[in-house]
Length: 250
Ligand code: G
Ligand code: G
Ligand code: MN
Ligand code: NA
Image 1 (cartoon, rainbow, N blue to C red):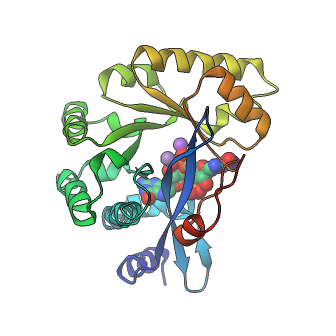
Image 2 (cartoon, rainbow, N blue to C red):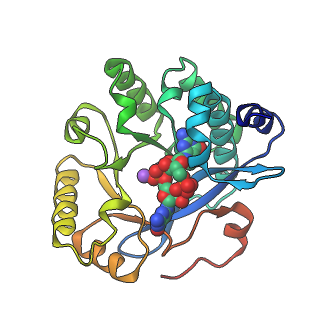
């Protein structure tokens, strides 16, 4: 049994699960939505995290059906949440090469009844390197639908700044590596503060990812980030636990 064969079966047999991690409004601490994060419930290996199969899925093309499954499940789940809550879905660079992607997103919205305004698409900058013109047009179509666009893992790639002017993002997600040691390193504060200023000038909002401690959260609030996400507010969890547990009050 190869892992690739197993993954192919997993998609067909619905062994993939979507877990959800909350993000909050930084100032009020109120939940604003959840990021959808896929997991693989392997019959013998247990729950496999995405960093162990996303690249395999990308190499084999299985990311296309996998990504469509996550998108549809996330939209269907979110349609049952209170209407103030959004859902964020990660798209792989490979999915961007699919001409069908726009139709797949429209179908996921139509079939679930989710308002487009409640869907956020997270894109890492590496996606945009190739086929810049086509990607720009695709993003523009999503925006016209009302879907929000977030630039994920901001700060980990290169030439990030040019992407901000070249593509129509609504939100920047600052990578968790900048949040780590935030309270010990003045340099991290300076970088985050600059990103906040930059985002304001471009009419974008900022999410800080990987917030684990109270101290980090307080610091980020003072620096003016709009949204916060991380273990402090909740780990990625199955939807049942999120809907029926009281929200963690940071
Ligand atoms: O869930 P985390 O805990 O381990 O996720 C690890 C990585 O996998 C993150 O970079 C995240 O963006 C990515 N990831 C999680 N779910 C999906 C998904 O549905 N599609 C894609 N393309 N990436 C995902
Ligand atoms: O899509 P993205 O690359 O941003 O994926 C988010 C990843 O970050 C997931 O693997 C998720 O489990 C992880 N994550 C979320 N919150 C935290 C946190 O507070 N600390 C750490 N170390 N990882 C986190
Ligand atoms: Mn993400
Ligand atoms: Na990220």
